[in-house]
Image 1 (tube, rainbow, N blue to C red):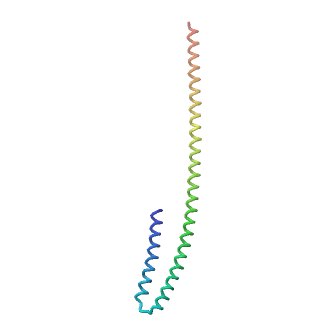
Image 2: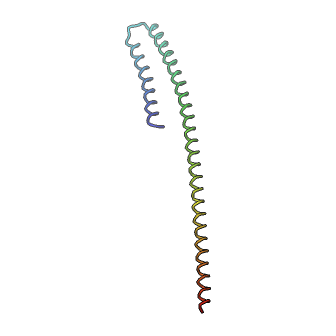
Length: 125
């Protein structure tokens, strides 16, 4: 998990916990009867539950989007690497063929010079 994702997760966790603790403390310190306090707590729990459900849906949606983007980027990088690897292979094959052709030409020239020098020495004798 990246540092940015971790800090976002930590922030959301802190916001939820802080909201719950703050709401509970505010309700406990307020001068209300037990019945009113229970009703307020129940209402706050429902409110928090609704918010966390919304955050969960948002986080799930974002996670799906990020996973999709990561998969696409991975495919692009893989395709690029395959393309560059193929180009490198083709270049290496071409260079090897050119070296082979030059070596063959050079060998033919050496053989030709060798046969020419051998026939000219026998002509002089």
